[in-house]
Length: 181
Image 1: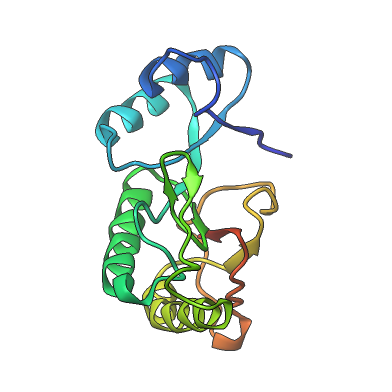
Image 2: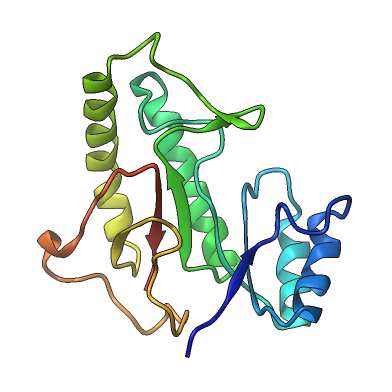
């Protein structure tokens, strides 16, 4: 069975996320994704979702930091850790990660700081440092494109990280999702 989810950010203009959750459920959709959790009352989101029978299926796990920016690597990793904790609290099994963060509605531009090759090297190094952190999570690896995750059960409690580390795929695309399965 496919579970449909909607990115609620652009829906219902003029309404805040807390007003959108009941409206999305009324529209017959039982899953939501949203951008950042940083400026949101996560407890209230959880309570509303439980009350409405809505599942948080994904949200952005990076905020103001970029996989491409080696200067802020430690901040990026700390933010991912906090996002993982938030995902657990919301019973959410996916985090969306972009190679760059967004500023004022557009992607950050680091071309004046790094060459393309340096950005790729920064992505690889950051992902290498994240791998042991993510290995502790019951996840199945990166999925190419945050719309491409496997439909079905979102119950991550009964699943484990693959024993073979080579089974973990770290794919730095523009819009990838960490999927905790």
